Image (cartoon, rainbow, N blue to C red):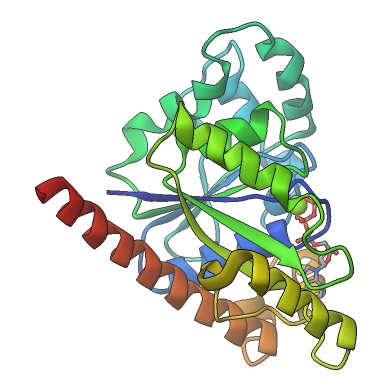
Length: 266
Ligand SMILES: Nc1ncnc2c1ncn2[C@@H]1O[C@H](COP(=O)(O)OP(=O)(O)OP(=O)(O)O)[C@@H](O)[C@H]1O
Ligand SMILES: [Mg+2]
């Protein structure tokens, strides 16, 4: 079964895209066939691999009336085993287009049906909003990963996200699981960061990943050079931490599979 992981937090600038890019690359480097889907009209994940001219079609063409086959928009990246389904600014128009369509939340799920045999892992980068694009990601996913910035007001707004998660589980996607909460932009020298971690832990408990992503300028620089952290700065803390995160993610997904199997058998 393909694991489909939505990287979601409606708060902007918390490290969703940085996590989507580098987690997907880390998983691909472990020889798993991986697809990164960019569902954010800002297209930051896409632009970390290609320039706009290299991406003539995008997820917009898949999810809009055109219903292009997703395989026609997928491109291979220069990272072995990693493909990308790009976004473009036009995705922002989708919200209006889908208004009033009863199957609006299911467009992405339907589009991915034929991909399951092609990929072991699918990672979805989502926009900083809980609108129809994010809802499509959560309906199509098996797992949710929430990045939270270790700062003041870190958990502000996470109750809205948790509420959305519960509502998606109640109806359209009961199989959706919270894979984990990831602390990002962590600065161990500041008390604010330490306080934030304690606060996040008190809310999310064991859902917190053991791995934290530190603030590391290399992570900020690498997309501008169209590289992931693993080629741009392989020895950096950012590379080490995203490698560790990939291990944790894979372990949790596998544990979850075993649990689901034994539930089915019972
Ligand atoms: N661990 C980190 N260390 C240093 N800079 C980081 C780190 N993680 C992310 N950044 C930088 O912080 C900014 C926001 O990160 P990113 O784009 O990943 O967040 P986002 O949640 O995807 O934002 P948006 O909500 O706008 O999509 C970017 O400039 C990024 O390069
Ligand atoms: Mg982003």
